[in-house]
Amino acid sequence: MKNRIKALSLALALTLSVGLLAGCSSNKAASSAAGTDASSAAQGTGGSTARSVDEIKKSGKVIIGVFSDKNPFGYVDANGKYQGYDVYFAERIAKDLGVEPEYVSLEPASRVEYLKTGKVDIVLANFTVTKERAEAVDFALPYMKVALGVVSPEKNLITDVKQLAGKKLIVAKGTTAETYFTANHPEINLVKFDQYTETYNALLDGRGDAFSTDNTEVLAWALQNPGFKVGIESLGDVDTIAPAVQKGNKELLDWLNEEIKTLGKENFFHKDFEETLKPVYGNAVAPENLVVEGGDVK
Amino acid sequence: MQDLGINILLDGRNLVRLLEGLWVTVRIALLSVAVSMVLGVLLGMVMTLKNPVTKALSRVYLETVRIMPQLVLLFLVYFGVTKTFGVHLSGEVSAIIVFVFWGTAEMGDLVRGALISIPKHQYESGRALGLTGVQIYRYIIIPQTIRRLLPLAINLATRMVKTTSLIVLIGVVEVLKVGQQIIEANRYTAPSAALWIYAAIFFLYFLVCFPISRLAGKLEKRWQD
Image 1 (cartoon, rainbow over the protein chains, first blue to last red):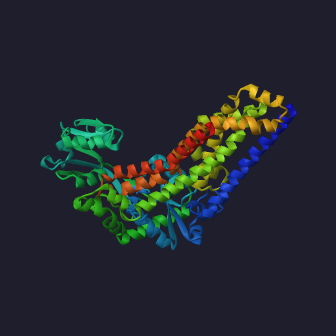
Image 2: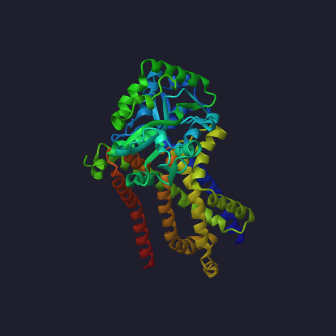
Image 3: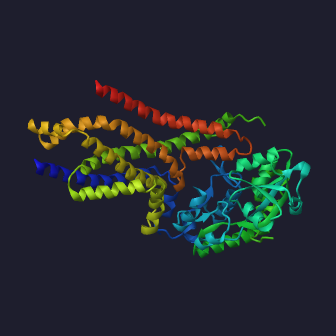
């Protein structure tokens, strides 16, 4: 009897392993047959090395990683189409490469990994250039810039940092605004909050004289809240936003840099601004404070 | 601008997109659950063996699954496989592999627990009647085990359905992500839409999970009689 149970268990162990294998392979077959997935088709061979410009052209598709939930930079409209400032640029890249764009929805934390493994050709997802990131990926020339902005009630509009001396400035913890004001303007009293919603509520309640964070954020907020205005649109260190490719994909990087320079001549990013950002920011924002033409940051 | 959030839900293809997202969720979850249940039962039986090799192996496997967050497993399969072997698995396939890997381990442990909870005299009585090992399992042990297993397995299944919300991090756009996309797309024109969209998503998850637990309840009742 014991032997029988042993034999049975061995058989079970075998079926288990076979089952595992069969399970995996059948799954694979099922999903490739469905053909719904974005990245699998175009890559084929080549492993985790990024594709060259020729390979992209030959495949007829350029795979671009964008945000799908960052209105107005990269988002999906009611009809399921990708839209926004980044996407507008992506469409143009695809057109100039002579291929169709294929979008992959990215999360902030996974952007670098997607490039490292060659699952996308280009990342165009509001990717701020930082030293740490530049070690992992190659950034092309910038096409946008962000700095800090300061929003305050229209009645007591703050238009210069000097006006803030001795006053209460609201910031969110862990933001560049907190770091900047702590380091450069000790004469300003900071009121700190953990969450964005709290900071805006504090400003509405008058618990501070002004609020500072990324200029794109405050500009959009001021538009929705009558009585408030962004008095300082650009302050502190200017961060740039640029397309990124896999480290070492020099060919595609050079192509992108050329493209950005060429587009600068026709003021492409101003048009991009008009189409995608202006409906949100209205006349409250001068394009010069956000847009970078030809990779040239002024 | 009068913005009733419900208008956003009916705007354009939004509702259809939510349902498409739900289909992605359901497809991945149900396939993973089905495969995990079958493999889990087999694993559970192997785990009850007194063989030190299978014991050690299944122990290592189970502990690996318990210690590793599902998110880490997802990243390992989706990005790790590409890095080490140069093979591109799609997000969906990666998700199913990880969910089956996770579900099989948990299910195996549940089966093992249910199996050893069957008193020894059940096996012995079977043997006394002259049944073979296979017959004992087929007619005595498995029917009793399944009854004990059902509530636990349903728990696991609904948990797997809900954990699919993690797979957005490997680029699979499922129901929750579609919801967030809709909310964000209307962020400036209808800030109150968020509540409506989340309510709709809650309802959709409910629509998937409720029948599963109803079915379990019915089965349990039928087997009691």
